[in-house]
Image (cartoon, rainbow, N blue to C red; front, side):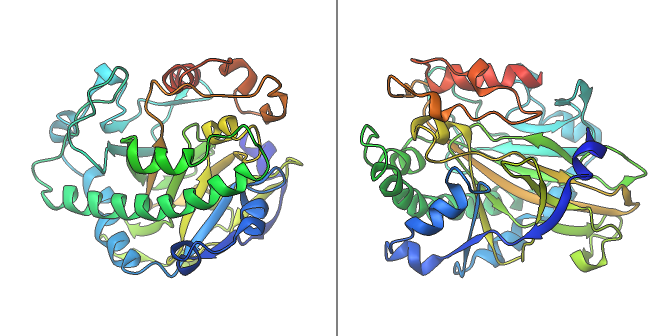
Length: 348
């Protein structure tokens, strides 16, 4: 799978940029949304010039390495198998192409509330490591900042969709991001790779509504010192996108940018006017002591929200090689909880 996709690598690309000021002042960014998130887009938009964002990013990301290096006994206290490791620590519990994935470790928590909302299908209450008391503060600070910016972006996305799809519920995405409390932050530690042919993160579409993602922080695994991306020994390393032609593009990113990716639930509720795009994190396998660390925030609806679609919703069924068929996972009348369960079942 990996060789087949990498052979299609054609170039790098710089994702569409939106300034923070454009979002704050509710500027007309329809053309940028269409270029980034529309049917011919790459599913990624970046936001630049966010005040204090970089400081919050640097306060959190080093914790990914520190978590991964905790004693196994302490990490075991953060594991919640009863909810399939979707809160707390997870390493080797997810599967890719039928094989347990040990290339990365993940720490999951809701950045808004420590106690899970009390409705059916909600995740577990947050768990935090006792030996890293600063993690909770840094996690919540950055997570809530990403959500705040996401709320501004969602306001513009709602306007974009409503202008093209008159059955769309006005303000739906903004309401989901700001009020539904079904948000999961994922602090990711990609372990050093030596001679591996395994992707750091395999090809997939996110399935919630909107994903906020930091640019990565590369660290020396032994010392914790920062490693510049320019020092990486293999150019086939980083975030990659597969476009509608099946071509592989590497995203050119700078540390000050906050990324947003469209996920499949937004594709459903917008009737295909917003579209998710397959993406992956690849590694050349030549990093004996370099780890990659990043943070993603997945924003989705309450589990009981019915995902409304028009009678003819065939335009939203966009299929991608190597991605579980959306048509096989979504049925009309489904709630988000139903769709989430149908999707997760493909990876366990």
